[in-house]
Image (cartoon, rainbow, N blue to C red; front, side, top):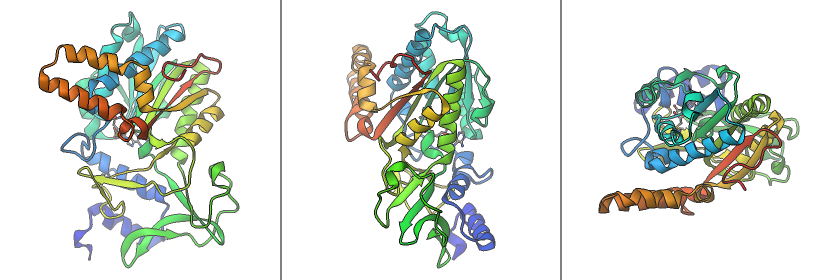
Length: 360
Ligand code: SAH
């Protein structure tokens, strides 16, 4: 029976046999971050030959426009002479490298920037070092230095471990990971939560059977970003797939070789993500003392930043087949039904700052 199991699945099955069902957050954290077998610890998952592809890998336009957004926000705050330019989960470093190239158009900005990456994957750290050799790496956001903070996170929050609850006749019961006929699968905790404290307010009226998700790690990180920007100045841009408002539903998904697979079949071998609840992120930003702007859809955001004009510029120097690639990338990043409406963008600024570009 265990012959088809991944090494990590065997480890998790043993853990559950010894201790009982585990929280989904622990399952996700192990599947993605286990030091030996975790998905991100062992591979570069990006690109055509990997498991998924992200906006900065689709086109240089994405990172360039984000670079210009950061430059605009930096100037709006009086162009601080020394600041932290940070990225959470920088993947191959493509976004930051494209952003830095675009920022060179702004006098003195790159010289004032100290680049910091929050990244746990040794494989991706290596790729990042090739593209952005001057970066300084951190395991966690807490060790970023205390200075004005200009930060971007693209497809980072979706990798943060979630917890699920299901509404039953007894109340909200945690949906943990246990064993059913020897296989990893969701099981309901016997004892319900006392009430619905901690769940998104929108869950109060959810019907029986509804699933509520929370992401304590995402909330804590959003609050940290917010309190730093509130105290020292700066701006942040959070881009991810997810919903504008909290809503019930199971959004855990697993991708392997660009195909959806069962999230419990091959832990460590498939990317596990959940949709980001932007309403909860915005609440966490408010709790941290800064101001949240948006969320807005990625298509509208990129259009407001001038992606059409940038594509036209690139087309001028392109061959016929390159021009078709530029058009395809533009469509993928902005069209509704593609990343344009699935992905949302949330910005963070100090209280009282003007709405940043793309959020007016
Ligand atoms: N932003 C990149 C990569 C997205 S994939 C892009 O858009 O292409 C998710 C990234 O987050 C990877 O770099 C992964 O290694 C990193 N990551 C995942 N979990 C993390 C964690 N707990 N702490 C720090 N980095 C993490």
